Length: 65
Image 1 (spheres, rainbow, N blue to C red):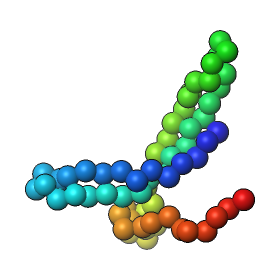
Image 2 (cartoon, helix red, strand yellow):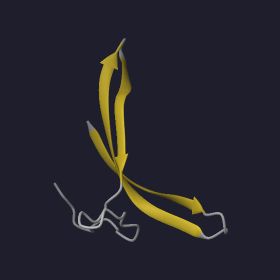
Image 3 (cartoon, rainbow, N blue to C red):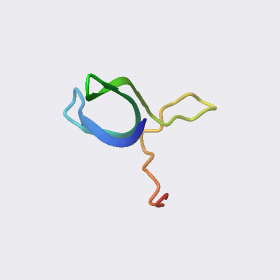
């Protein structure tokens, strides 16, 4: 299993740049001598009270070991 943070985005219909951070998880399996992604999931942080996506959140600068 691997985890990642991805900063992605692009222009909206009005040409304004919109970006956000997404979390990702991949599950890998070795098949026929090669590593293959067998499951992939992406999600965005959201406010649990309102259900609204938090587009302005950024990753913490803390290092984890």
